Image (cartoon, rainbow, N blue to C red):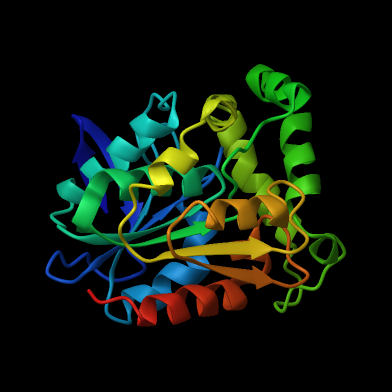
Length: 267
């Protein structure tokens, strides 16, 4: 689905069904250097089970025109404007990694327009190693290699995909390679610089799910627990033998966690 956001073309996947603004909207926000494709295995289900889905490409990513936005608050405002451009009023929002911080800010700023917030692979502080930042800024392929090495849980590094012949780290690598040509360095800096998570959490009035992997080396479980404690009432769910790239590594388990949580959300 093509949208006009701030006078620039933007793209959002809708899970295989036309976006219907009369239904509650469910927005998915990808992480640093990625795009809407990381949500492919979850969006289709929700689009066919009562939600109108918007899996956005942030500016400068995927099918959305650039430039990439420089900080988390600007990205959160853009997400809210994309929802409005699609004709939706109230929305639930799920974000992964950097996208989780963006989703947090969007929900905090939306007030009672926000139906639910789901943060995957997140922590209140998500610093970036200076060597990784430098490699991403230079367009060095070593940046994406390092992110894949640390991002996927150890079981996923040696196979384990239910689909024979599919290589999960390889799919992640190809996605990040697209980001390396443009937005990855900008995104990593935005993640590193963001310091408003706990202040934003205090403003969130909707139900909250924190979904973590117990083998996440990029946003370790300790950080997820700390993030959950910043909300008045948040549910923490932990996926076993799962790293940072949970929507790809454990697509069914990720879907189950999101679905079970949203089943209790009044639209």
